[in-house]
Image (cartoon, rainbow, N blue to C red; front, side, top):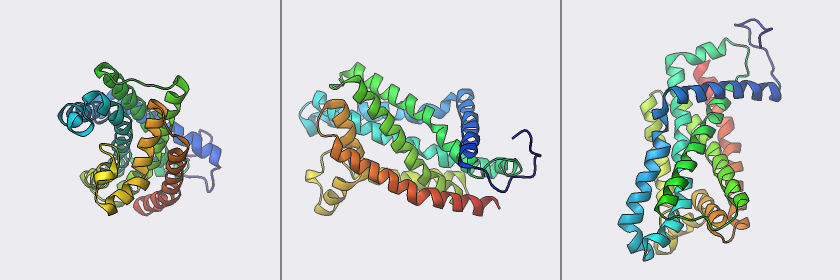
Length: 267
């Protein structure tokens, strides 16, 4: 990068160099979090509030006891936490565009995709903090992992990848709408229905037929079932394959859309 004149972006940058540029900008995002740790409130305080509220207000009515409901709920909250954490990528990118930061990026000899890839990768730190806080607080309240450390690490890795895939929806929306506040509004309007219309909080058996059919194949339900299998025991292969298929489909659709919206916005 240093050997090239600023203001003359190269015509082509290979995937390896583009990834290095993205990682460099991801480090910029990590520094922003270190200087403004309040950015982590949504992945720390929010899951704790959901855990306490649902377990102690509804746990007895839903599962007969707060202990059994906590074992059911915590893996699902990991999925919900990843979805809400993915919103920040779109909000952050929209803010940068509105402040003119992307005009500076455009004049630099870096891959066009680097600002988007960097924003998505910088969210890994947010996911790690969110998982640690949720599992740590749940353990204090009585949640127990009934599998082995390898399964726990695999669950954490999968849920981070799941969140990173959903990030591309937030990036697409962030590049599409003009106002930063609208990004969060649009994404919350998407995330809330697909979270509650799944098996994160209750099993789908009592839902209306059409909603039950959706909940059984929903990416959120499949991810929650995968987390339950990896942390509490039970079937893993089936839901994990479905989860991976959804993740691949989301990236295949929304990565090109995000790049299209990005070029349209900054050129």
